[in-house]
Image (cartoon, rainbow, N blue to C red; front, side, top):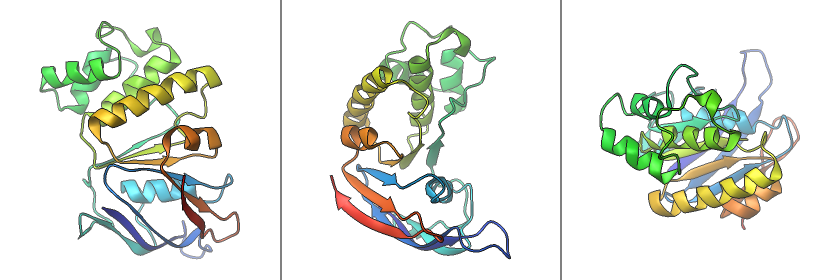
Length: 213
């Protein structure tokens, strides 16, 4: 279980809190949506969970261990951008995440995201959907305890989203990866999430509602 306890954050010492009193749990194997209007602190919470930002107050507990402020917590944050190395071919992108070992695992992941046959392509030779699937395979290569998807589908058109929803649902069934889905799009929630955590738009942000979908 991944648990946030009374998380609060401000970016500078004299600033007011951006988010405050944020507490929720994610069970392993769940896909939980984190929603709210733009600017309400969704991405801040995602970065705190992933360990990219140390919260001003509160704790992050993973498997009953306090990981607040610690790196190497095996949580992967996947942004809206593809975050691919333009000079590396597809298979090398996966091997880099696998620390240049386990070619069989790399091939297994490429098969999982339907990129087998494209091992020697560069990112600029791939479609937007293929790039997104490659980013997902690279994230899964570290076998994360939690995959944070921060507006990961927002730049894609509706038809491409539909294909990716199906891909992600199939990958989720196979890998049982735990997902925190940060989005403002109700379509993302309808297709992927089991629960929704909705944030207020007031400052500082607090949790407005938590419900099953």
